[in-house]
Length: 491
Image 1 (cartoon, helix red, strand yellow):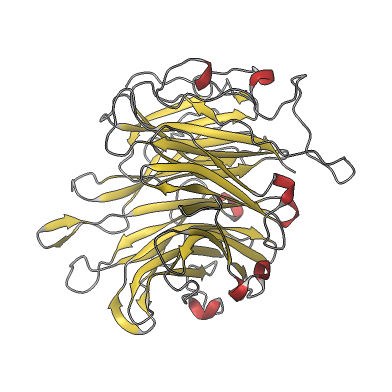
Image 2 (image 1 turned 180 degrees about the vertical axis):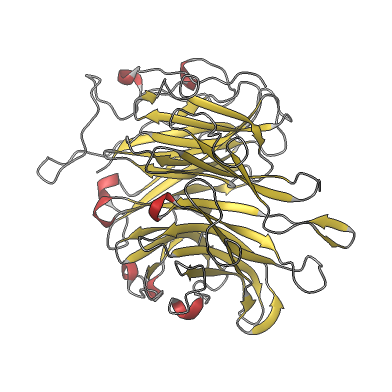
């Protein structure tokens, strides 16, 4: 595979004024990592303190992450290591249709960590990504070891999908003591035949680190009961020790939740797994949604559930499952941030029509009871349009910021392929936070492309958001998926 590269440019004084060229992967100054959060003297701006005079929030220019010159690259997630470095995970390919190798980047707010991998980037050709646009996630253990999860092809069944759990050393090398050469394969369900097609798309959506550096993986798998036909999908949470040994958890280290519609018990129900958080006691909260709920009068309904530290469904949380109508037409829970005794969700939905809006809900993390007063909105659903216009909006992730604030990232635009990356900040009361301008921001990353922000992480002083400008199936050497990031100080 062609060597991937990472350019460090500390031209801080030019950061805020530079535009990013989004139409190619060239290695000019537009594709360098620029600290967009520095002032004219090159020093990193300190976060605003309660005693400091208020200053207007300026959205910095997104910077390109040049992971590939002629093929697609997507950065999908970001975490923070014990030294407050940002760790970014995604994939990159050498050519428009070439194999997509797993890629991990380590960087500070001002530039890559040169000692990590090769000039800040570690390429893992042993793991070829076979999933979609949000099936790579990253978390960091207390030792600095990096855990990355990704959907990969099954070893024998070409239409089947498994999950790779990868452990890197703090320096960016595969950990030989973990799995096989640093890679652990998770096959939740093997391929089943339905209408002559054998497939079991095990997918991973999120990874998290719990007590004792245990590894938790959240995803979805096809149901394997009954006559063996592929009928529906189930949630799963798998738990491993810090070094990859299956834990005493659920059944053989895996908790599986076979969801049935409440008003049609026994009806096979497709689910999409999304976010996950591990609490201090080792319990897990997972989120997602289901399609076409019979009798509920809506095509998509939100789901939220909790797993005990032993790997069983916690029936004290929302009666075992939160599943109810919020917006009449559609409501999704993509991800959520834990804020003390509560969790704040990010997703999208709509009452009617075709244009989605961002939606945020708040729940008690112990009882699963939804706060119907959240944001002072009717029914406790904070619904807003980042574009303030008649376009569709898709919220993809949530991040807890200090002082009870919540960052929500995603996209906004008139439709495919005209989408721009977007983010918003809610304050502790569920209202758009004026400390971050008007609270919502839209940033075009590419020309005539589908732009997304997918991942976000917070260090001690800065926030990083990562995503990409996407070109769908029309990948060429000139126009292909390009990765981007955004860094700004916490306010």
